[in-house]
Length: 203
Image 1: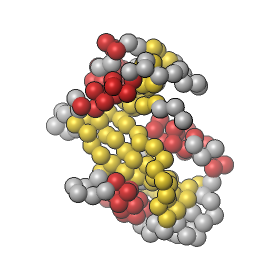
Image 2: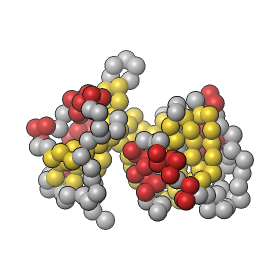
Image 3: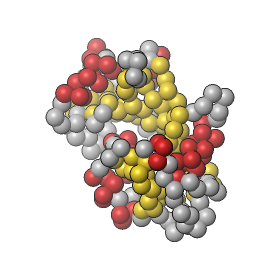
Image 4: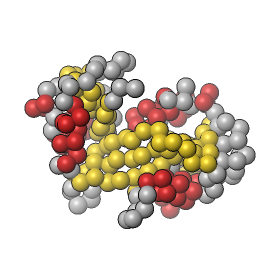
């Protein structure tokens, strides 16, 4: 499978690749000189419609690593959890549908953090930890004004039967629900581009 990097900035995304991806919307091709993440992030807050910035070049990997080297990286991990009936776990946090995830603690492995966060945020026990699905990237500002890049590893997970879900209200999670793939429309209509990109892989 061809490599591609997507860095999300609010509803906008910067794609780095050595080919032109299909099915991109409101696409603007940019040059290496235009790849200033903070500038693009601020523009994303102004734009009325989401944009797709596209950088296509054989040196895209070098460009991506260079971007990472200039920013503080926040590591996080989460899971796409399937139950015994074949339904998937979603949480509702701060007005949007999301997937359980959280920051990786010091000296904690990514997989361990992913399982811990899912169990804490949804009140369940993970019975199966599968392969990594992908790593997602998005930018934001910390409260101290520092501009950071969050790298989140997402893993396949499973639980036996259909356990009751207990949303972690202390983390602003107001709902946790099991959804079949045929019931994703409501989620897709009110979620983050990163999450929409993840659940596309299930169809």
